[in-house]
Image 1 (tube, helix red, strand yellow):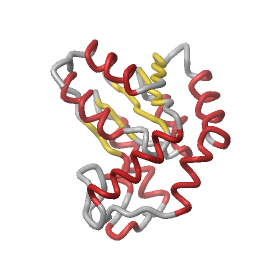
Image 2: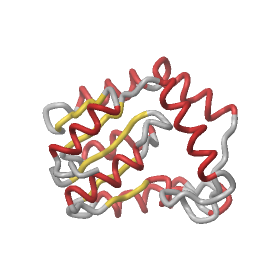
Image 3: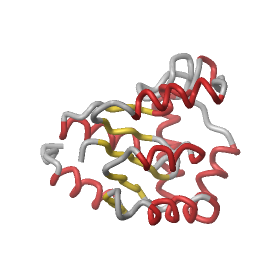
Image 4: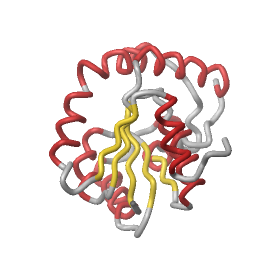
Length: 172
């Protein structure tokens, strides 16, 4: 596995998991939030975003975390593996609140410059509704690429820890 996507609901722990997987494998880590968002949560022009993403996808090896559903199929076409952090929504919401307490008003290391951590009702609703609204689309795309892409579905923090141990990160 040289090109690995890490996807899942907001708050699932994609960035932390991806960082640890990168440390375990030595693969370059690409946080989509970091390359997508311009300062002060400004969205890039679609054409600029797609060009930037295409450049990242052409690299020889990477771990790429983030959802960005409109580009998931494009990313799956270039991937060897996809890790789907399919965690309970209550855990995901809790983690977002925890993250906000830790980073509130400051930049997280996995975010674009000038994008201070914040929380709003729209984001919480998206996380809460992910299993009903977005998960089926993600699963359908994963099934579509299952013959080409190794699909790894992790349903708990424990499963994620076991996977990281197998990948060589057992000391954490």
